[in-house]
Length: 161
Image 1: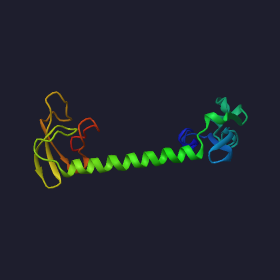
Image 2: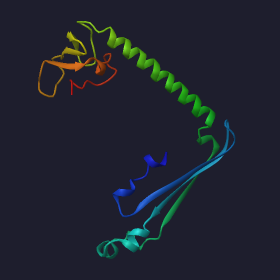
Image 3: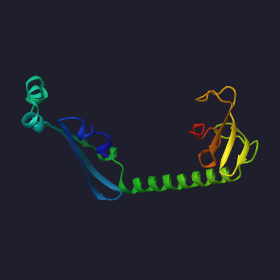
Image 4: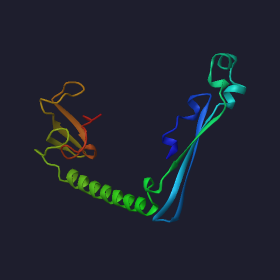
């Protein structure tokens, strides 16, 4: 979870690291938790170039750590997390099944997320782009693979790109 929140290590001479923990009595009962985030600049201070050491205030700072404590009611329990994940997987599977059925039954005149189907050639579908919709090249029709088309309003149109 922390990897998505902290800057990438390769981007700077300094880096951030994090540690998180949850204390629980059981999968459905959480006692509390914490997150510790550390700012490391030892490489910058010792191995950084002379300009970075002379002109950067970062090199003068000590390594700092922030610790955040969380109340039990702010932490998702393992049981509720697993239930939510199962629901999301079931919703994704149902949506995937619905999209596959839609793509299998495409016919001339069917409305898609890109416009109305005007021609089908195997796995490729020609779409009549509505006049009010702007396309990359100003075309009034576009060819798309059947596998990227969706029901209207479900996904943005890629216009065959």
